[in-house]
Image (cartoon, rainbow, N blue to C red; front, side, top):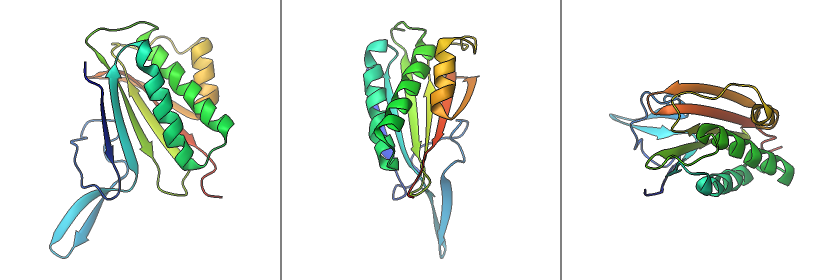
Length: 167
């Protein structure tokens, strides 16, 4: 399976068909220049797809830490986010590999000064494990807002962290 990464920011024209995804409509604006208009993002996004295998979680944790540094968070806050993302991924994989399937992580870094990082992780499960237990407790304590659901591409967990921003 090929690992893929894509990036977009406020200078990138609307490249992806995001309709129907939990990101659709978020961070996208329309700019009109006379008779011409373009769709642009007001936030930076990074999409990461790795094989649905616990061996690849380090890539998602590293991407989380790298993007969290843009928010000027403390090392403890960055580590908390890494742990929360690791727990979310583990829940979506149920601790085992799913050959031939992918784990998708979409990161949305809010506009400068917002201190916001949203992470949408989609896994191969048809349904999420129950919302109780140690992993869920850690996830909810460290991530800020946690929203879950099941879509056509599998179960997903969305974490939204609002840090200090530019203070």
